[in-house]
Length: 386
Image (cartoon, rainbow, N blue to C red; front, side):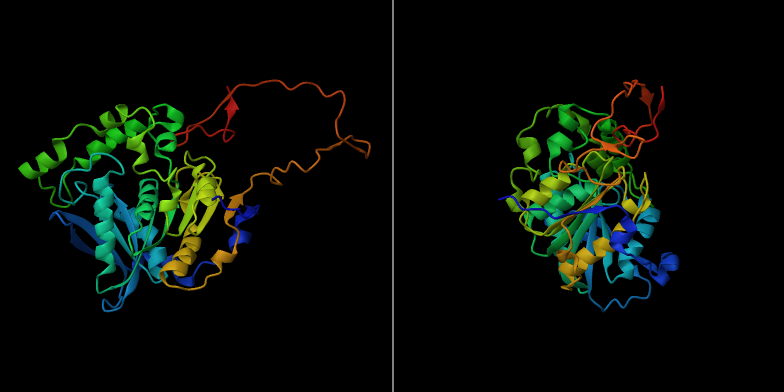
């Protein structure tokens, strides 16, 4: 059954969110501690994880946990994580960043391709482990951009008991049509990214960079993952296994979706709002494939403010008021959203209004060119006469 959707147009994003930064946010980077742990899977493989704590936190306290689960070598990305996670730490959460199997400092054979059953099975075990730690309240949320947004949606399809909510940024539930490999059914340049990712994952973990027979076997005795996608050029079971499209009823975890007008995954948002019966909210703005607080084009917004409200609602049981707000917040680039009920009129120059002006010369077509986005062209942005 499809749901009605209440939409709010954001002419001025700041006015809609009415966010005032905390006085402490200017120096939050000095308030983080990192603990390295291993999470043992049922087959004995250990996944490497970083736990981000507010500095000085009492380890005997219990916290709701936010998980980001990626193959992108956590130790190499601590500068990014340090800045990204600080906001959540200030609002009463611990953030845990886990290297997937066979990537970074995690043991095991490198995952064969995106969103495999191996990745998602491990993810369920990670969530269960996090919920049972003495420093955990038992409530876990997931968040992430791109890959981390994708597997947040996919874990929500599995509905592990401890997963209470997720925030997916620049992600889609329709793998074949919209994932980076076959956007609109044609293989795109994104698979050059997949090949570089294979090379990246072949590196041994920091800081020891241990290279032994086990590492060589697990990280090099594999075919390039791009071959998998070259063999899967048509929609079907391979793509459906981790796509919510056509099986939206599996998602019973509340989800907040953030998209960008210039991102390739933007069409997912209205589908999720319309088809998922669990609580859903969405926000779209004038951004490419970035977190909105650090995005291009502008204006940027502090999306984590809304994410915290969403997590507070479901992980802490607080009434944040977010459920009473419009389902879909849309940044409108022009003065008014398109409305077929509005009559188009023009000023004639003599004080009268007319539905159609006479004597207007035909427009001249001018070819232009512009820079590239992450995967798509920028449309009207930064175009120049060719």
